[in-house]
Image 1 (tube, rainbow, N blue to C red):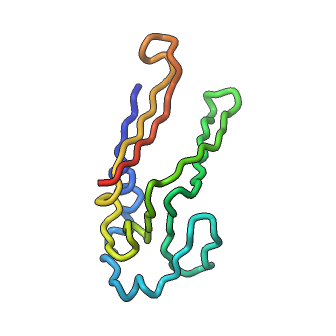
Image 2: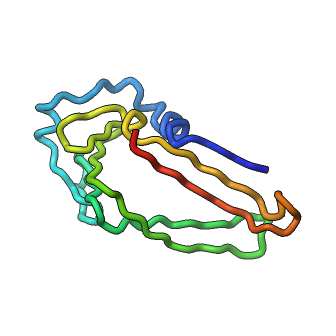
Length: 132
């Protein structure tokens, strides 16, 4: 069984509740604090999140459930090649020019169960993220 979802599809599903919000104005964005990933975000107020180029970004992978005897967990680390700014469903590569996130970044997610190809191959989980 292969499960493939595009990053745009997942983002669309996750952000469906935000669809009524229009693109924020430059003046609104200029007033928001910019928080670098790993720093403390201001409590209870909006902010722009910056993923700085080259900074380590931890991603937790976890496999668990009632079918399985125990769970497996690992933290993977990736880095972006360039700065990426995010605010709600919006994204920017320079902090000034904003577009819908799925117009800036796209990709795919894939999950394969063990043995699917030849009865003994390992399962896999893959995520691909690309600039558009």
